Length: 395
Ligand SMILES: Cc1cc2nc3c(=O)[nH]c(=O)nc-3n(C[C@H](O)[C@H](O)[C@H](O)COP(=O)(O)OP(=O)(O)OC[C@H]3O[C@@H](n4cnc5c(N)ncnc54)[C@H](O)[C@@H]3O)c2cc1C
Image (tube, rainbow, N blue to C red):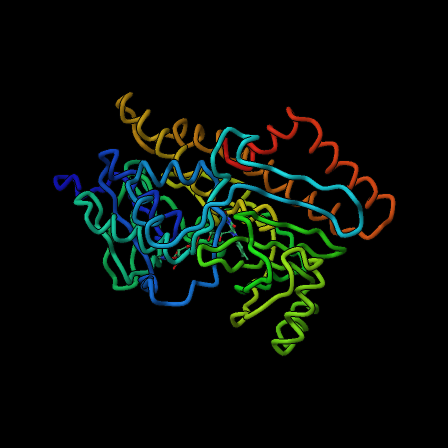
């Protein structure tokens, strides 16, 4: 910290996967960072059951974690690289297949537990002298003047930074305090998640089947099981959660067309509500939003945290450029550059997933035929297919 002025360069609020990655990236770039988190993450231990929350990390996210020196710790603990993706529709014959070879990447991405990612980031940031971690601490108020933004924490203490970044998740209390509105769409759906054993091997493939009013993904885990994300209407989710184990496994096998054989042992299930929530602005006076605080998207393409990690990369780049130009880190033109570069990309992604969800969720026969033809068309046209593969990888 600049002790003469008692001022941090950046204060990051929220140390989930995105906030912790940002704090680490900024500290490694030489910035002085305060990191405020309301609750310490649950520890990750190899002997524990695989966490029910997993994410498909795109190669752009793996690149960032390599640069932050956390990827070796994550991949050597527990991660499963997938080399293929198979997408098909229950109501039409078309199918789309991506192979690592199509995108010149050996793996298309990696399935990793959220808790392990956060654990590895926390281990690393605790060794960074440039990060002051305040946990547990909650931000209660935020005021800005021409020089700094001051945060008041729940223990009554204050801290000041040139720039405050909210990475405090979908509900983002800070976004609310700053009066930044969001555009919301409640999908009326829940994602039912569990880990399951399957009769046939998962082939290190991420599988996705579109069904009328539902999508079902099977993501490969390192121990040979698959992690399922089954997005269905709220009432159907309640029904699936209430089924006994045998009935749930039968329903799941049938919904997946027994592509990996019958479903074996299944962990307890959980469900998460699904919505799209997009902040109308990403920046305000000495303030910026990143990660789910800025954009919550449908999980059907498995891109939520990947978009947040791309925000991290871009915000870091913009702040380094500002410092190199001896500019105020929170000058309006600096923050607008970040907003311009990230908001359009995130909006495009969010609306694309929304459109896919609408088109693939529809039951109408002509639409189903069109979907099948569309999947086949993309599959048969190498340039189009490479474009899709590059987008999925975050390139
Ligand atoms: C079923 C499901 C499947 C998904 N699958 C994928 C996938 O395959 N790939 C993918 O990329 N994404 C996926 N996502 C999305 C991904 O999980 C989210 O995008 C990601 O977790 C968001 O991370 P974050 O760090 O922005 O927010 P969070 O994880 O919500 O972190 C916010 C942090 O801020 C802290 N906080 C909140 N308020 C305060 C406060 N006032 N003061 C201090 N701290 C505070 C919280 O304690 C928390 O630690 C999925 C989501 C769902 C629901």
